[in-house]
Length: 77
Image (tube, rainbow, N blue to C red; front, side, top):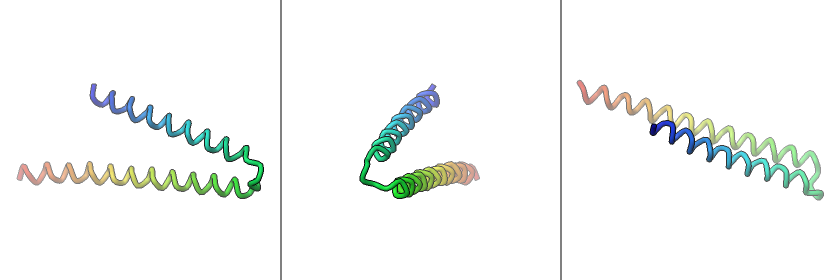
């Protein structure tokens, strides 16, 4: 039951972040003073930032799970 709650909470936060990102992209695309090339560069940079943050979070979660497993095995020895 707790895992389902976490999944729903994280899912809703991700949807909100995705919608906010969509609105920012739409706003950026409507601005007339910025050349198209620069718009694409900004979008690619933002995508790179998001992927980097997601990778760092994923690695941190893996480390935390690995450290938790190590602690359990050491305490039993």
